[in-house]
Image (cartoon, rainbow, N blue to C red; front, side):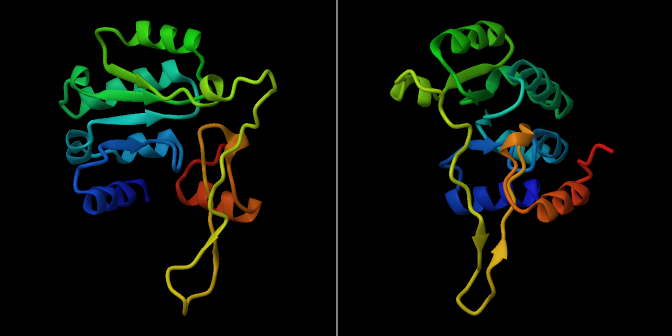
Length: 165
C-alpha cells in the first residue's frame, strides 16, 4: 500500500511535492517498501510520529542500503515540536542528514492548554457515486493515533504483518 501510494503521489504531483509521508501505514511498513527509485525521486521524508532519533537512524540506514547519500536528503519533523525539541533534533542531524521543521501547535497555538493528540482523518470514502461507502483506516507509529473501527484496524495490521502477538 505504501509503495502504490508513493507511486500515485509522484504521478499526480509530477515531482512538485517531494516529501514522502512515512507513517501512513507505520514507518516499519514504509521503510520496508521505500524503493531505490522512490528514495531518489523524493527530496525527503516527513517524520510525524514515533521516536524522532530512532527514525533518523533507520531512515539513514535505509538510504545507505539503497546506495543513496543521506546528506543529500531531508527529514521534515512535525511531531509535537517546540523550539527546544527542534534545536536538539537539528543538532543530532548535523552531518548525517538535512532536516527541516513544521512547528504547528506549539508555535501558533501556545495558549497554555494541553492540545489534543489528533488530526482530522477520513473515516469513510467511496470512489464514485455508484459505489458503497467504505471504512477508512489510519495506522501510525503512535498506536493512540490509529483511526478506524477496531476490526478494520486489526485486519490492516494483520495484512501488513504489523501485529505484535
